[in-house]
Amino acid sequence: MRITYRGVSAAMGLRAMGLELVNCGDRPYRLRGYPEPSLRDADGKAIPVRVIRGAKGITSGFDDPPRSLVLAPGEAAGAALLWRNLVDNPTVVATNAEHLDIAPLPGRPAQRVVMEGRIDLGNTDRLGVSAWRKQTPSTPEPTRAIPVPPPTTPVPLL
Image (cartoon, rainbow, N blue to C red; front, top):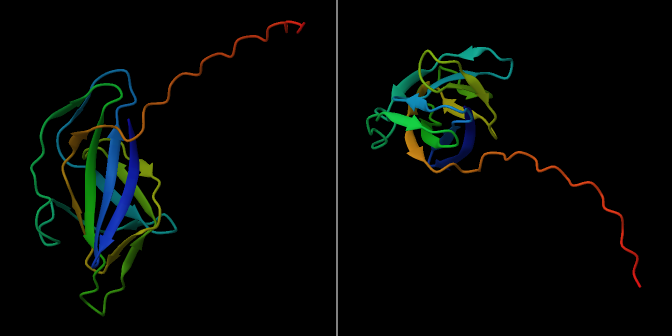
């Protein structure tokens, strides 16, 4: 499986980052639940963060419960991360994550997700996650290369 960054929408300090998981294997992939994010600073050190399933304490909505999904090879699921760039305590330094690792579910292996920019949590250290939902893949699976036919002998022009 492959997890990719799908961009960030930012408005009034509220951030939402899309994630896409594509089953790149040759067997069905089962999902039920939430992505498991971990954040790292520029030096690769873990940043403590409180992961919230849904958006409670961040904003309203975003709280649909997880459903069982079975992704056939090439099928995709999407989820989102949600946070506020909010400084609510001037004595606590604001947090900026430069690296994002995502496990598809708790206990499964994580992979580094390449993202543009950083996750600017302010100093609230809260990160909401939505449950995975089935979606159409944003990019098709790579196809196998078609062999180039050998050159043919040119036909003389008359």
